[in-house]
Length: 160
Image 1: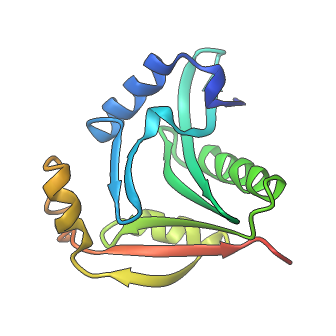
Image 2: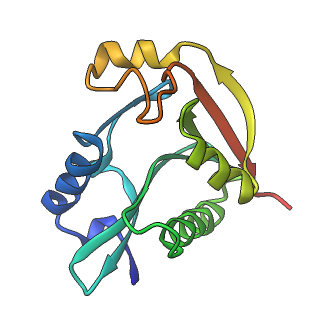
């Protein structure tokens, strides 16, 4: 597995990755509407050509916001490696915190991020209903039956 800046990859390949895993490269969260295939980030690439993971982010002031993190190979360190790479990059950009938004049903993400030092700092009740008006393809329930309604803001301080 090699970690490379997304800028080095063919954008059509990145766009296709998001379409395959999210239905489109568009991500709608409380902080904005993003085309993930156009954002900065890193990719985990296997055999020099196959994307096995991607992380995208934006910088606002002294904060880095992770917009997406995907790994198609669970429990092999792909997500952890990409997250570490993004945090290292954020420190180099003099960011003091990394934040992200996930939904109330995403128990896997909540476990993943909290184990890596992220803390839930805010809950936005019914925020997904607003996002669904822009992106109607967002499901109403998770595969395990949890209603998808709320967004949760997680933050990790980088100073110290």
